[in-house]
Length: 197
Image (cartoon, rainbow, N blue to C red):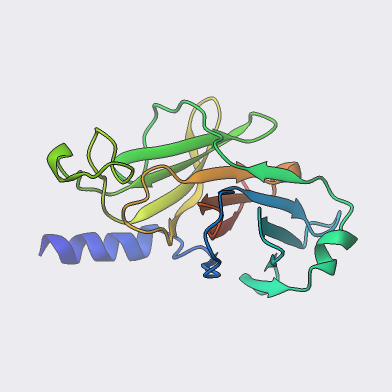
């Protein structure tokens, strides 16, 4: 009964899953992701895992991430950003019980928060590199956008397709703050559009 209640709450209170992509690229020493707007109109976001030649496009009209020709990257004159290791302090409420990471928008008017529903696995069940000393937090991952400084929720939380053991995903905002990218090791990424007020 509890599970059914949680399931329906999750379906109706979130905006579903964000567009995600796992290209199955070979692991390299580079674990970050390069991003830039497709054009000044902001009708798409280009993503390029560092150490790889592959380029991917999040298309706003299709709500889909797909592989594109590498010339798309070269043709874009927009600002290139590195999506890696960015995090800001956040102590407000969140949709999931445990906040995994958070990052402020470039203009400091909003903060994106990634949380997990839980439960938290005991430290004794964690493994080096997979859970640290705090235990592994399991459950669905969510991204929500909150308005600063009052931490007011903007839009609905979005479910993120991350592996259950991903406790510290990378997160970044695109130039002009139109998109938020959540990634893990640069080869598993989701794109969320910054919701309107």
